[in-house]
Image 1 (cartoon, rainbow, N blue to C red):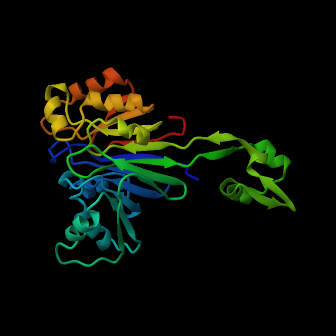
Image 2: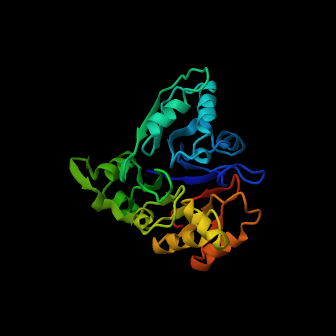
Amino acid sequence: MISSIRLYFLGTGGSWPTPQRNTLSVGVRINDEAILFDCGETAQTSLMKSSLSLMRIKKIFITHFHGDHFLGLPGLIQTMSFYGRTEPLEIYGPIGASTVLGNLLSIGYYSLNFEMRIEELKGSGSIDFGDYSVAYAKASHTIPALCYALTEKDYAKLEESKIKELKVPRNLLEKIRKEGSARVNGKTINIEDISAGIRRGRKISYSGDTRRDESLLDLFKNSTVLIHESTGDKTNQSKVISYGHSTGKDAGIQARDSNTKKLILVHFSPRYNDIKPIVDEAKSIFPNVTAAEELMEMEVNIND
């Protein structure tokens, strides 16, 4: 069962790093496990400034192979090896991941103490990781790209009075929750016997780089948090869209139409010293908007 989900904004800018913003990378800590969505070139430096340990990272999901989304991988992986990592690292990405990452990670003279598992994701689908799943779908970008959605599994809320009445041992509660039933004193106790209803799992969706596209609404549907790129505002709309990106207004529409609870904007173009026009655009469509800042951290609460 997942007790805590926390977000770490390790890079919030787009295209190239600036003195104000690093290139894109978002960490998600699920209990004691960490996941990265994208790994811009400054990701490991930001990790070292954050409260998220790079050694807890089990999986990395890359949206596409523009440099600002993946060039931090070689340095991060070498540092993991220097720190003595032995646990395998899983890396997921769109078509071409095996070739691009295989070539990138073979640069230089170094050896790893751990196994890297690279998996190419084609089309759309979902991967089950036990307490959560990660779904993916094709983004509307200029090269093969994916958007992702991490969803915590729904789980039954347990009724304390029923547990006591049926004399269910505490050490069997998680077994009943996961398997649906267990034998207690010669009798089968089902989850329905001690349940007080279902708690819906939290959902964190991440756009990577994409134009606004209605085909992504199903992936983003009912997100607790939607982290969506917002490269520019209406003054640069034609250029933003032609390069496969979204405006603040586009991000707001995607949040509104997917029944999202909270929208967090990322991937601001380096041309913007002031991102207020982008944020204002999004808020004109969808009021619950936050502009991500470097090293911002946020707990995703059950009732968010």
